[in-house]
Image 1: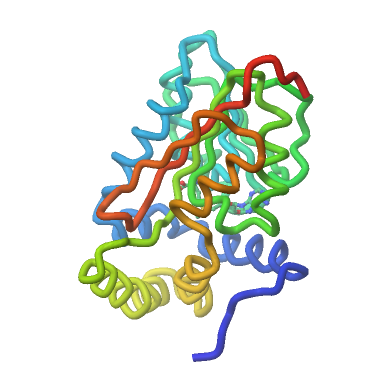
Image 2: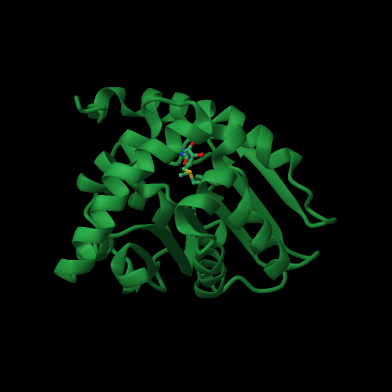
Length: 243
Ligand SMILES: C[S@@+](CC[C@H](N)C(=O)[O-])C[C@H]1O[C@@H](n2cnc3c(N)ncnc32)[C@H](O)[C@@H]1O
């Protein structure tokens, strides 16, 4: 099958229109593809973000707002959560999500150029987002800029299993079954072929840890999930480093 992986120049527009196209079915696909496990992984993201009652948190690449809602529960009525995404159709789905009185603002914007002041968030989460940006080092600098010193960033994304047997099974599922499931449930031809290809290009566990450390985050750590098929990375903006 020909590659659908876009070049850096075309990636922004490609990813944006791809997510616009699959928005109505995105949540269903997430549940089907992970057997519902993404829910527990997102709960872990919120826990590791250190979001506290009264805190101000940005969920970048918020998509349909699943992580944003979980964060809103953690920061409570005195806190503030902003869910940012560059796909208007994903945000439409997010805005229709019942939020039970929680305080969330959904904003259309680009992770690569966040419309926020330096040092303005207590924590920043990004779920399945870093794999899709045009430059991971660029995104990490932007994340660090808007975090207050001591504030944490947490990324949840796909990973690369290390056990040879599990890797074989995982890639067989991911490369063959996921594109078919995706096409069947969303009608989108490319989107779920892009997914395995985007993973091949992604630095994943150790690579992302290295990039986070190079970007100046401290306490960088990674929790592998489901034998490494997914991973959560966490790091903090060092104290005493106002942007
Ligand atoms: C796979 S979805 C993840 C949605 C949600 N975070 C979740 O965990 O279910 C990735 C989202 O990232 C958004 N995205 C990708 N690159 C972006 C960027 N540079 N700026 C803002 N949003 C971006 C896409 O529009 C899409 O909604």
